[in-house]
Image 1 (cartoon, one colour):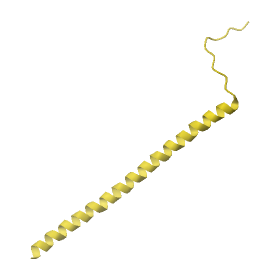
Image 2 (image 1 turned 45 degrees about the vertical axis):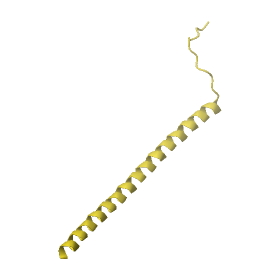
Image 3 (image 1 turned 180 degrees about the vertical axis):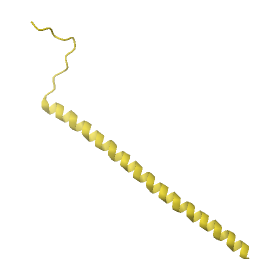
Length: 70
């Protein structure tokens, strides 16, 4: 007679295993998508801040030149 192990994994049908694998795969894809979106938003913010800073620097330079010419 074969000895039974103390712990037996619960039986899962093939469809149940496939569903679990599908869910894990979908969650991984969602996570990767969110990371990509966060990176894209970060890049857009960096570019926008860069343009804003250059605009402020240009305006302050123009103001300094206009006050000196008066």
